Image (cartoon, rainbow over all chains, first blue to last red; front, side, top):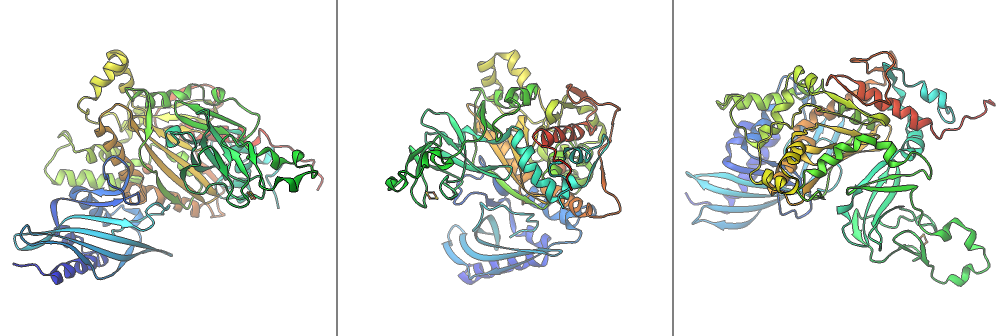
Amino acid sequence: MTVTRDDLIDFIYAEARMLDEGRYDEWLDLWLPDGHYWMPLDWKQEDPLHVTSLLYEDMFMLKLRVERLNGARTFSQKPKSRCHHVIQRPFVDEMDEAAGRFVTNTNMHYVETRLDEQFLLALTATHELKLVDGRLRIANKRVDLLNCDAAFGNIQLLP
Amino acid sequence: MARYTDNPAAVAALVRGREVHRDVYIDPEVYRLEMKHLFANTWVFVGHDSQTPNKGDYFTTQIGDQPVIMVRHTDNEIKVLYNRCPHKGTKIAIDRTGNTGKFFRCPYHAWSFKTDGCLLAIPLKKGYEGTGLEQSEGAKGMKAVGAVHNYRGFVFARLAEDGISFDEFFGDALSSLDNMVDRSPAGRLEVAGPPLRYMHQCNWKMLVENQTDTCHPMVAHESSAGTAVQIWKELGYSEDDPKPPAMEIIAPFMSPYEFFENMGIRTWPNGHGHTGVHHSIHSNYSAIPGYFEKMCEAYGEEKAKAILDENRHNTVYFPNIMIKGPIQQLRVFIPLAADKTLVESYIYRLVDAPDELTARTAMYNRMINAPTSIVGHDDLEMYERAQEGLLADGMEWVNIQRLYEEDEDFDEERVENGTTERQMRNQFNAWVKFMTASMTEKEAAE
Ligand code: FES
Ligand SMILES: [Fe+2]
């Protein structure tokens, strides 16, 4: 299978839609097993490990996070949050077909709501994608919040 | 109508042995009095001196609701100044950190000040000749807080000019800070990156109380820690299998009541106290290769063991911080309104210790205390529900009587069953003491 720019862009849109619709099993299945979802705390942060990040989650933590959302005693999700992504057309920054490795850069507005509260985050998502057994998968995802250094209330779902 | 201002008896009556009145959490007048009295009379955490390593480095923050600048003066000492130009009030610095060189220069009319606050120069000064500027408050420069104490890198300040000394205020409670710093083979900590900043729509004291609330983890955190344990079992592991760091951190939150009962709580005078006297959720972290050897080199084996065997859980330094010695974390609960609190969670690197320790500390911070943390979500949900629930007029008192005893004496250090709410009562005892210490009684004229 050859990967086109459109395939990459469609992938990013489809991922956002899965998150908006809460199709988390499908979403987890997009990931390669040793991937990390990184949301830095600092602007242009370089080190995910030795200073604090907002998120730096492996598959175990991501699975825990999404399973918790449906738990019988998950009181912060009674009632549930909802989210909504508005994404700009992704840039394809790297396209290494021989290695089956691709990097996209996507600006988006992320809206999350629960009860009477709603907030907006402007962010840039960087996806490292890999072609494995004829399927595009997420190798790593980095989400840079425009206001990463601001004080936030709960951010319960995933940009 | 002011009910509590200039009325120490009314303030003291908000705290009874077994319960406190809801006004301590929801009343804006009580909040303003806390800012004026409690946060002025106590020693409040400002920052760590590694945040301002070089002369002229500064850090802006607040003590209660008072904007302050912590700065390293030309003599290398840390000064804490009100962040207010003595001319017309402009904040001198608003970036969180920076370097000002040898002096501050106000951006409005360029009055300048040495880094200890003293007035350095005023442009076109002849305009003040013969106006009696020398007698004005402004001519003295930026005002310093009442007193500053740098304890092994941790900078505390008392806004009030007079009052309790640093040593008397903290007493033996400093042993928790000592243990945190001693865990560095060099006896020194360095701040690691910026803090998490997490906004809470609740009163600041709910957070302080939660630090020694050992009956909530297995309930409120069942959703996160319980699910983690569940997934772990589904993956085919048992309780005794070695766990990855994330599981080491989160699984102990599901420990049974007996675990928390047996861990013990110690209270010290003036509202300080800690959980985890005998063991804690931090006791069973796996050893990091090379660390113990470095500690032995620095302290000798016996002392190194003693330092590392101390696994205190949360130490509350009244009024508004907590530290976790075993993982070098400090959280400050900054009051913004009766129903609004900013929580900043800092982590520190142990100088001369392996980087893996910092990695575990950073992992703990983001997993447990971030606005994106599932454990954080569990807690904040409870605080905010409580803040709203307290508006119910049917009941006005909040219960804090678990393991209450008649005639509790908070001036003596005590170790009790780890599920006692004695530390919460200890905090409220200190709350009354420092709220009313500088309060004058108004003649009841009306
Ligand atoms: S307000 Fe600062 S110099 Fe005028
Ligand atoms: Fe908690």
